[in-house]
Length: 274
Length: 268
Image (cartoon, rainbow over all chains, first blue to last red; front, top):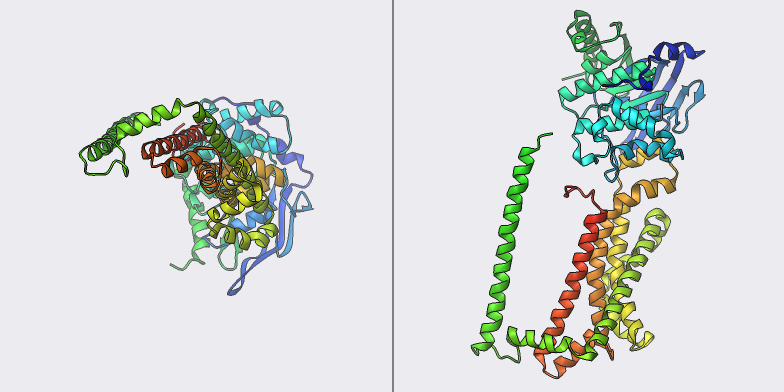
């Protein structure tokens, strides 16, 4: 696999660049929904801080509000109370500094891989020629060089999600928000995607906020794992993942990895009745 | 990407396609045989059902008549105009109602009321309003052709997946960008199904209009031959109308394959 300019090591640079290292911050963030039966508290008093270049995962059972939190940070959903800041600015609407990745690839079936990847640039009103080289190098970086002109339905689920990753990376977001992006993939594909995501975001110095209910994945990818509890969604604890980078598949067989998994599971377990 | 199981699958499907095609051909031939033999054997009065060969003969003698071209062109003109205007009207109103919810809520009872009315009842009125010429037939064709396009445009535009909308929202796309980059193309397969129905309806509209009152056109000819008890020629006109419907259908089917290549059930 070739390493285009995108993949130059920029992590250290990104960490140093920010005068204040905190990129995303929530203070006393709460969210309630009105439903027919009354009020549901999806998030209560969430305080988190994500530093530049950091990879932070949110894990928790379904209904713990982790997706809601991500959508609020993305500016796709209004908060009820509290504060959300990105680079010190309150967030009220989507920002082009942030890229969002969904559980489904959400590709447009009438566009080939290249055209799908160019969609954000088109929406931003950029000339396709100005970003075509960039798009091609990102498509290459996610391993789809030979599928540039293929249509989504000709691709497997994993390949489609690679296209979605390339699409979000092409416009060089500073922050990548991912809502269970590999949740629909089989275990092997998920592992491959994890490695690829880590390689690309680390070298490009992208700050990542990742939502999952897969503990392995969360620990493997992250610098910090935020454990959340359901109804109301609250932060039950933050586990610092001190495993050295670069990480590889065999990192998962380290005893340190197993200890971290145990710690996350422990924090989750207190709140899950089976 | 495993290629061979797919290839085997495709070959099997093609083989069964041919089996079905041969079967359909067999049924067609059987119908023609009965059509020929029953009147010939005296089991059916030829006034009710003329023999297949006499219909074929009547078809030939009809199409070589100089006046035939005139009637054919009049009807084709009504069908094509009714189809095109009806499609554009359905598309325009459908888009307007889909993107403007207040308009949809205001007009929905009338849309439903109009849909529930058998449009054919308007045919005599249109003759009174627009005369015996082609206009009344075109109006009739428009009125019944635009409806499937209208409904399918609304349904198609409303069924855009929430995630695609969310993607566009995360990119801060304008409503216009959402419409022409996502919603319209997403709705296109459904809209096109409505357009195909519109063609069939335009044929019905033009012919019904001609039945009710006309001095030219294939519907007029059909009525005339019926009154004259020249049933073989009446059948010949029906065959021509069936051919017009079939040709239109296959042209639209071809356009659908060509332009809406991303349909789920289709391999590019």
